[in-house]
Length: 396
Image 1 (cartoon, rainbow, N blue to C red):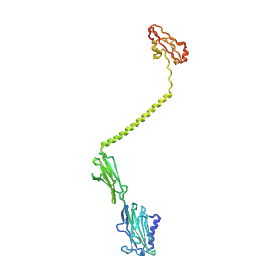
Image 2: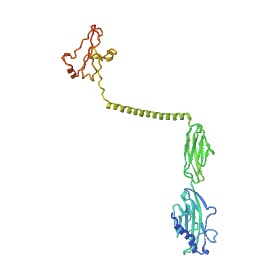
Image 3: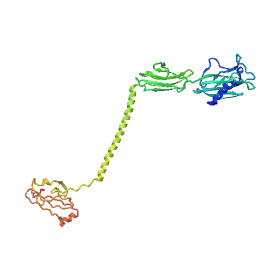
Image 4: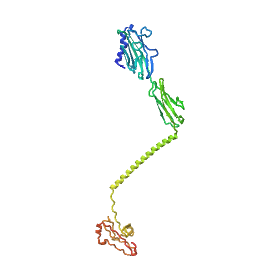
């Protein structure tokens, strides 16, 4: 198909409508193009075929007859596209040669006075006004006349298969909406919802919106369950789809929803507790590690005066405060030892214990075996005190 726009279309039209008529005298303009009365606007269905009827006659003839031997017609069909009415060539028969776009042809072979155009495999884009132009010459090339007519074609499109969907939760007592929409239709499709057997039902306004294809079902009950069919239709065809509605009872749905929500909440709490436990454990480990690394060993406690009591077998049996051994508010006895920084660095002499029964305590040699106190201290010995015994054999 050849498109003629701008200056090319203007030149061609000027040639067809003005140029040829200037070459022929009024007495010799004998061609008249005809179309059927009342058929200037045609309609056809997409995918089908249509015939745009047209024929020409000579001046003074009542009906079309066979062309005369000297007639040499030039026939061109155009489709006027868009708002600017751009001329797109559909078919041309010039000097006995015919060329056309796919699906376009002349109904009758040339030469013929019937110049009707056949269009096959129609598409929606083939809609629009069609212009037929006929120029008649004789065998010597003399122009005998020119004429043109316009017909309008409207290609209709049946509804494409629609899509059905359900909006809402079909529980007992709730409301839902069934929607149906065809993606393509010319003219626009109308919609009808029906309920299939065994509980057949046809729906009308106001629950049905025939233009937008919606069906509103309110206060659902289990008896409203079934298969609902939507039919999209216009004047040239129809198509349908269906959706299954299953109305469930409220408690069961609530239990299922509650179980799902409860499970999700429980998992969330469990994950939160695990994360909290891990963070708290890390927080406790960090201070403990700091204490272990930075802590200083405790100093050796001073040895208080008169605070040790040793058992007969040499083991430490108890530690008694020195304050409990000396009389209250009494002045310190001469010769008492003051506390020393470390037991291993100084040998303490045996303190004098108070008399309980008038017996004199037996002094203990500070260095048994003939070893001096300084030697014992250097060897790391720890001095001990052995309590004295009274004459009765009791410890003092």
